Length: 183
Figure 1 (cartoon, rainbow, N blue to C red):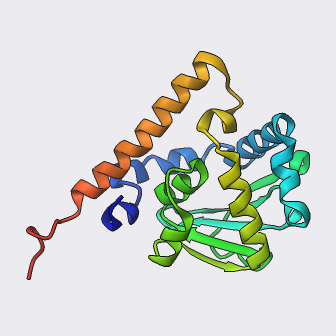
Figure 2 (spheres, helix red, strand yellow):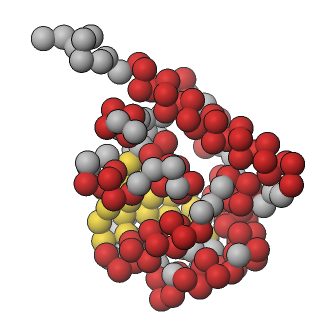
Figure 3 (cartoon, one colour):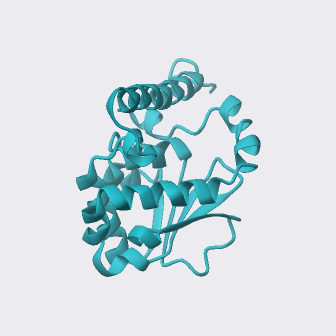
């Protein structure tokens, strides 16, 4: 994947959908999803060890809100918060939503995004590494997070991953290429 593609931000048309999404009980829905994953795959959360009670602040820079996540198995909590609410978090991760989702589903390399400064990470190095290793080993698919199985899981994975890929390509094609750049 080229650097242009790894700098993808949520396309403008999709950003306009997020005020509607922001009105949904997104935090409680994500909390239930994370707890459901903990019930089905408790080893993922055990792998975090002492870092499972750490508060992770995740800031999709192309959205108007951020998230705090405490991945503590069946006590996991996800909250939608203002972007300024980093003070109580041990780890802060910032980047475009499509890149953060690519980290979660394993389609993008976190080290490459970090060193190319597409995402930024600060705070507890040990907690960041524990989370990164857990996510990489989990090989999560969207259906895992939604608690789906069988044909419904295959359809959800194909649709969601295909949609994310299409948004990344749309964003990359909207950027001026070398021949189109102004002097």
